[in-house]
Length: 265
Image (cartoon, rainbow, N blue to C red):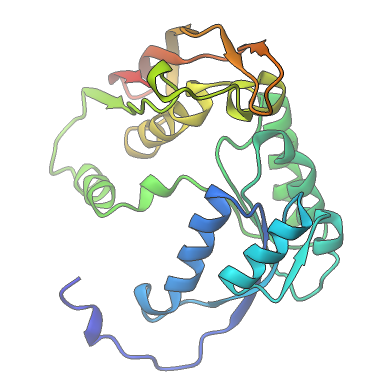
């Protein structure tokens, strides 16, 4: 941070056209990141150019394009991916629309960033990875915590041997916004058909990834999940519906290098 103003640009960075699926929470967050890259990641490896944004409701997609500065808006992601100016596809949509749009983008030769969890289940994720590996493009899941300064420093300390052998890894991601006092209805994150899982995939994915990133692959897992609120109001009204994903999980893990760990979300 104290030296960032000392670096100088020696050549013009290339532009890369971005196509964003989703204009809500993640669409806004990712767009903000793209807009700050040119001066926060300096000198920038590339300059993001906001080419297109896509969402279900036309009026909201149009407003998102105006607000964020995208050149075009779409209500059909297939149409958006036909735009040759889009070189990077960013999938910030719900989990059930991760596989098909990402696979289509990969097969079209576009780089892909996909929100976590990558898919609703291992079968979907495996198919996405197989297509990505054949496509010879850049592809990643948006595990943003890997890039936090503290995590980067921890990674360096571990790899340098400064911390010695790692015996134990503990991680918690405690977020309470679905608890009863918030009155959260059965949004898509609480519907297995849309989300695939609850806290395990939504929050746990981050700390599982950090365990793999910092310590290594996991050898064995023992876990328990729990759904505390088994029925919630429907977002659009008209009654209630059963919650078929987990509200919380706790796990103990064994890493291939012999370390053990606990995970909670």
